Length: 291
Image (cartoon, rainbow, N blue to C red; front, top):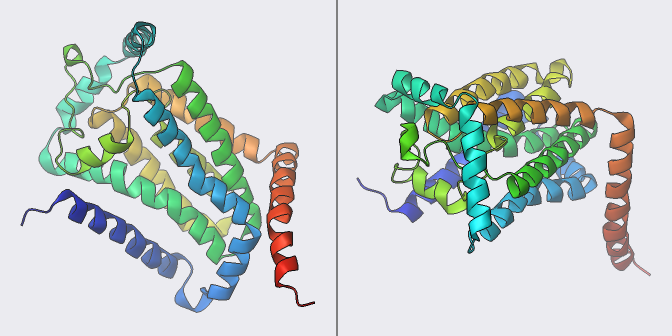
């Protein structure tokens, strides 16, 4: 049976929702999942949740702007920067592909890159809401704010093309020739937001936040650690990132996680968030309050 792309995307989105429910049942337990607690926690963290939902749009907006006409200077910079990154061990990508370019293996890494990564990124806040863990959610959100700001800065000033963009490198565009997954990725990715690797940096950030959040999240942090390793291999194997992108992604992820644990940074950002939350929610409470 051949699926149309809209049918494929509906199945993709539905599978993320189903996996979220299953993940909560496994990690929290149905007896401890209380809708009222989740809604109360969501209300308290509404601004953080809105920011987490909006952050990927920064990359999408940047990609949309990048998709417009570019001048010769911009194109020259992209070629030059990509050449620099390739010189930093770019041949490793071709070696990794020669080891792992087998149908079932590449299918596995495509699922890691285009499905599991997004599931984990969006499942993590839901898990924290279900546990009403406001401290860890605050650290998670702040770490992601820092990560996305750094990524957007690099993508704007230092555009680097995906590793399979130049035929002379010998890297095969495994992900991008896939009928369904390739179309979904290229619809969202301008293919020059490569340095640092967003997938690696966000995976590392999430892993470090949960790994340092106590024994409650031990199983989930183990899973995040394994997913991070698989993501690193996936972005190299599929013809997406260069080794330098991966290394830079690790550095960004570590920096963001450490910065998010700093009390001064936490209190500063949380102060802004609470001020916005009070500004939004207090008028609503005054309207609903009986006279």
